[in-house]
Length: 315
Image (cartoon, rainbow, N blue to C red; front, side):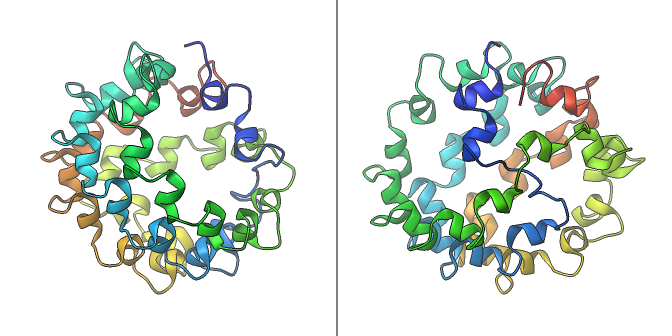
């Protein structure tokens, strides 16, 4: 592959430039504040997003998320009409084959084609998404993206009506302040440590995930997802110790309410199919992820996460 992911994303701009040009993104993720503090300090996520509007309102005011994505088609229909996600991803290859084996990430995405080729090759991204329809057509047929988001309001208006995105994120602080002051994204990801060190300093990623168990063991075994994530701690404990996920996301609304108010997540994803059905119909998530290999095997077989993320290219 000739281009690095950075080149693909913006050619001349670094990821930092893409995100904010002059502002760095850094120790937002952590430094002294917990993720919850970073996200908002005193406001709930709903407050950060739009203060008075629900996420549903922000996305399209009157339309549900399903309507926004394709108006009449369910997400399954949008993805491939008749094929399951597994079929869409590779038809004949297992996710293990898609994710890595012995190929670089570029190879993973399309085996022989570079990311650029995958995204475009001879077709524009628009063509890839729908071949004959423009992205505008796919999103809403006759409306521009701006119209889709809020019909008559500008994106700025959608986010908070009178406030700029910066104001929405923190009101008094600039995005740079929110993200973390003077460090570059690279510093955020790690400073002087490798990604593995960032994740757990002294432990390998596998150790971080479950110490002695393979990811396959973590994902399924006989434990619930809560058990998988931390064995002893519930997801709530992991995220914020005292707050439930519902509290973090919206305080009073359940995740289902936030996503669509009236529709259950199952309804949003595929109306009649469960999430498991959407992912692979007959296979469990564990089967989809790898079948016989542990997640470490799926990720890169012999390479560390650092090698997978980069190899020879910059992020």
